[in-house]
Length: 285
Length: 254
Image (tube, rainbow over all chains, first blue to last red; front, side, top):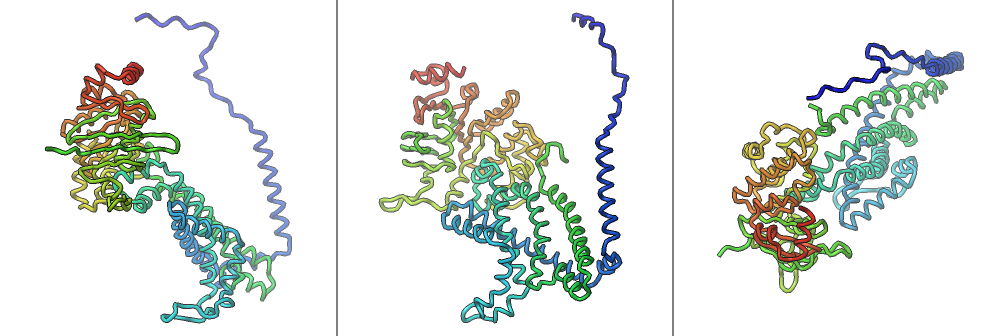
């Protein structure tokens, strides 16, 4: 073997030297400015017409705690209904059957096309349209008794959510490679089994971030149910300030609770994402 | 007298204006290893997909093990079979894809057991034992719990072969099984296929690996523009082709 040719002169060895830290002046200045602005806002609120003692008194009041529990119950149930409807409608939308396709498209069109608050009011006032509801010969009841604020909120929020979720689900299913359908068919699977066993588990990974978004939206959308007397946290906060006129204090109480709930949901979403990320990284063990 | 395992009669298939198969007829005999060669777009992959009913033929008929595929004759008409019936017919064939198409959210072992457990409803213990034996056969015993992403292309394709074999098919269809592989990984997949051919499995292989065809195939079929141009023993078709188009294709690829 020939020896390597001698290296040229004039290029010193830098291997022992450290790289100097950059001063990052702009970062320091912008951080200082933001702290200043925040301090000014905090000072304004501290000196404003807010009785902070009322905030701390009501934040753990029984009615408020019941309200936040009702908010969470409604958000979880309505979201569950929305996801079930969303999956069914997305499957219908992607089916080769033109009747199912059209029905699914019509559902999405109707419930995305009208305001949620209007849908809630319609469900709640269903008794005006149908005084009595039931199955002829089997069971019947007065609509006012059946359509409680709880049921009206659940149907209104859940069915509306289903229209949005169906599009999220459809996007997820479309993201799965066509070869996966073919491989599932090649081992004798029918359409529905292939969807359940092969396509949906892979689609879930894609749809969790947008579904997390939708769920956070749902937690806050439950506040609309206050207009149909569902006792969620905003409705209960309003009831208190109707009595004691501490409007801003109670709105802050409700706001803090929403922030807390949403803050807890974010790490939960990350756990779910990890669960459905099985097999997607080369080195995970 | 033995009957052909696959009988293809006057099959045509169009994709819009494009005629993918023009009046193709062919027999595949039990135990035969057939290699289909030809340029891309010649219809060889479409022919395999029609046998597995991933593509639906426009006219003609395909019989597998004596059973007409996809349709039922009644009176003067043909009626399409239900999805369930087609699924049952598909179980007689195993398909290996160019891009493997392993299920990425399942381990190698789960990929293999999915069909026998979910579709055939067989006993988990028995299925698992067979799957481990199949993994041993394709040389991947150590990779049972690996996900597809953690395997090389050649390993993935060997798992895909094991997955197809787990359904105990009468016929194995290979759609360019080595085309998506790095050159150094081709050999391990071909070795598994050779071993399978030796075991007596009936195989239809769409391939560009003429060396494999020469060594393993009982018959080589050359297709061009949706039709069979020439067929015969591998040595004859590849060594002394009669048709001008076959000669042109072979001199282009070698």
